[in-house]
Length: 615
Image 1 (tube, rainbow, N blue to C red):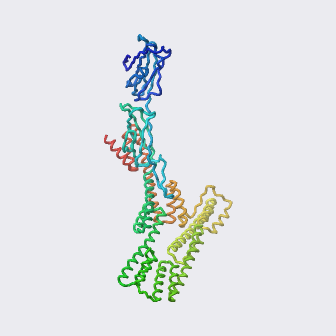
Image 2: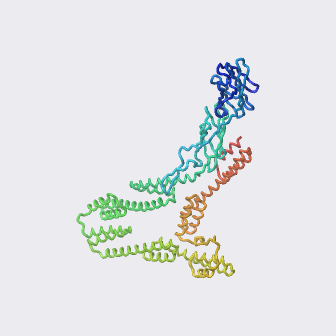
């Protein structure tokens, strides 16, 4: 075996064979493609080597580096070497007889390739959000990645490399590398946007095997994830509050339920539940105070007063031992009570029910009282309660009928029903609504008259189409015969098909029912992601029926929209800066990065500017 070197670099291996006859058309065989940094193996068939002859191998780079790790295999029929770059390499196999004379030769030009480096996102566990309608978590698609959260990337070679590989990662200015474990890297981006990632692979000798790049889209804002977490925490807190309530830890339950409402103020199930819990807790504390006072009365010898308190407490907030405690108190009173005393106790119990507006129970106990001792005063009170129950029933019926009429838009008919309800049972809340509705009716009448006068003025100037529009809008705001007659006079005038006629809501004249319909439409837009459209409708509802809750929600939504617009503006500037930085225009890029901070603060950008300025 002989080894020769050319001026550039040529390795020659000579091996003698005593085998078969010489093949007429020798050729070099290589399975697959040659890749940079990985050993390539070439071979010739044994039948191609002359009997008792030899084969000489040589490898010569054309313009690149000299190959490494040159060796023979399979008794010289195979020739191996490792390309160090992608420049073409010429391999020559020469066949000589036993005297060393070259009988023939063949060559193969090999162009090594770099490995394809692929970058993939590794998702150990998909992100989850809280579905407040179903009260359950749901997993997002694995390709949904959250801002300001670690994202795991993994590099791999295609085809696989047969040896040790090391990777070098780089990211754009808006992306921070948290940690790297060779093929894996954890990155973080502070805001929604695209992270540009590049990676380069090297073998154990430091030879570059290839490189790749990828754009990782961060699509889930931190605010959305945090709001979901707060809604989830609110529901879990509310469930724990209910468990505490059921275990009779009432004070802790109310405190935890209040915390749940603070976390998710728009969750009506929780807020309604808290109101009911507060009402019950108020009754509980009232009953507890009565029971505590009962103990003091008993210690002072005031047994009748003690028993009275216990009875009232049991009416307000019954307890398991309540009746037993009452019975014990009764046993301490003189065994031989007079009928009048028993009647007084029953009357006191009835009075307690009466004070708590539990009228049916009050009537029952009053009846039991007069069954023992007749009393005109009690009979009069029972008659007043029955009349009161009748009036309350009538008031509830009229109020419900009025509510139905109001939802149907029949405001005057609704006012008549509300008025009848107030006559039967004066109610402060209904009276306020009655006055508000009367104001709405008056404002609609005035606005309808104003639109009618505008129509008259337009009609006098022969602008009949615009006049017709005003008359019809006048009817939309409030029915009136004057506008109806003018519409009939202009029946031959046609409005454009795309004409939009204004209604009461467009003039800020609406009822609570109108505002609630608009809020429902806004909620649907908000759930669908149309925050701008939802905000406009929430403001419209607030202008119709103002409330502190809606004012706070609109303010919060405005903050969310401002934050979104600021992030988008900053990301746009960062993208332009990234392009300049990649183009080598460092100063211009840094100026733009600083401009992006004016739109929205970004800790990663600030750190990047400091690093570049320090160089």
